[in-house]
Amino acid sequence: MNAKVNIRRLKTGVPGLDNLLGGGLPEFSFNLIAGSPGTGKTTLAHQIMFGLATPASPALFFTVLGEPTLKMLRYQQQFPFFDAEKINKSIRYFNLSIELVEGNFDRVLKSIIEEVKKYQPGFVFVDSFRSIVHAIMDKTQGEAALERFVQQLGVHMATWQATTFLIGEYLVPEAGSSPVFTIADGIVWMAQNLHRNSLVRKIQVVKIRGQEQAPGLHTFRISDNGIQIYPRAIINAGASSDAAGKGNAGEGRVAMGIPGLDAMMGGGLPSGYSLLVVGPSGSGKTILATEFLTEGAKRGETGVIAAFEKSPSQLLSNQLSALIKSRQVGVIETRALDLSIDQTLHDLTEMITRTNAKRVVIDSLSGFELALAPEFQEDFRASLYRMIAELTSIGVTILMTSELEDRYTDLRFSPFGSAFLADAIIVQRYIEINGEFKRAISVVKVRGSQHSKQIRLFDINDDGIVLGAPLSDYTGIMTGRPVPSSANSRTGQ
Image (cartoon, rainbow, N blue to C red):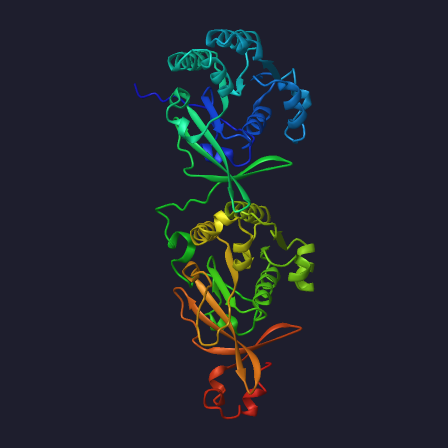
């Protein structure tokens, strides 16, 4: 018999969770939401419950806390997913405290079965299941009784076609020995790590039967809107640079908006590339980035800028500010500390999709690294690699800036060795000519493209960046001879 049973996947209503589950929650599954205290298990359960429960498929929530309904309703109603109209219509609460006093698994199971028969719910929640286990096993009932209880509960719920959730506080060492983990169809693990005074919340789908889940740990936040999960960017092993549109640099070029710079890059920046602009403080990195976005707006290409060091009022020119007001450029201001790269990628891709953006600016990688929680700083290169690969795979062209200490004698392209992440690199430097600092610019690489090897002087005026003469015209620099007046006059061109 080759007939395949189709299992309906339920949309949980929790942003990002369906992605981790492989498309949604299997209907009629027996699930465990586990983790240490304070990780958000009850909030996640309520967010799922209010998202799924309807009069035709109601939810029954069993509690074992001292004042369950009062406490839960008091705190959960602060979130926008809470719908008071659903209470007693689509959602009902039942307390198991009396059954726990008797200390018998069979009595607890009987009460659950009676309420399920009476209410016929589509969804059943038991919070906290571990409290039931401890209360009863402390009264001499052993592991065999617990395993029998869990098996019978699972069989009854499957028979009544109810999707079930057991919520419990578990420590990692307990997980392998508990029969609940063996019997469960799905296990969602929640944790919070305190790392150098920075709190990072993580979530993992340990297992989900019948479908492929997103592997690994993913970050999430609990805000005034509830739980928001940020799935970790995972690079497809079969993906190639050609698949990201990098097989032929001549397929399309993006104008930089600075006269002469496109020619230095061999005709402009290839579409879908990532460009790294490095240089010391004040060398003009942010101005080059704003010219890049402004040029895109002139050509009808929406842009997005993620600012990690300055506020938009400090960062942007009057012209770009006008473009933001007209929604030709979107701004993601992420100056808060304890960020995760997954959250930043989520915010970027959401705005890119919503605005159909073609150009993205990240200003700067140095500020981005400092804004991350310490846990993510330690893995910054690998996480940044996944982020750039994900963004370029959706077809946007990226310009990243990076602060670089100018040591005059050293030639470096990144303070943390991330130059390999970029498809193209532009370096801005300071040089000394006749006792004055001058700015110089050079194109270090453009993958798959012939580019200029010249180092050119440039100036910054009210019109932006203006390229000057090649440095080779200034014959007196290395020899100590005076710079020709004819060359000096071209500096501001």
